Length: 94
Image (tube, rainbow, N blue to C red; front, side, top):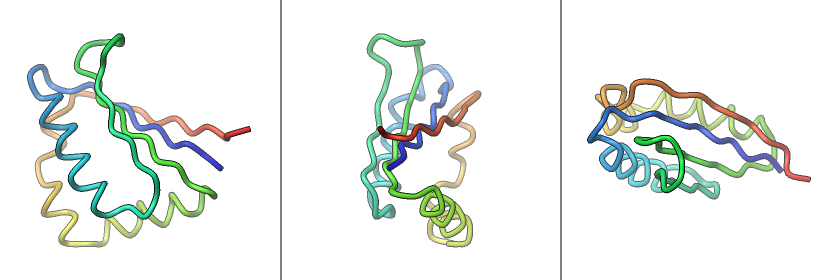
């Protein structure tokens, strides 16, 4: 199993909006365990999305599927205006 962690630094004042958007859209679409988190003791304006997948190919399929779906693109329209930077980490669960 793998944990895919995508971390965003939100535009100040937009972290809760970004977190809500991620929770609403990703929670509806993904057939995997998804966690959306905001900073408590971390750099301010941090939003983290974690997805558990059995195989990395599963995550790759998710990315491709979402990129091709017009409904997903419409719901996520403008989300890049809500953050200033981001990165992704992938961990293997032992």
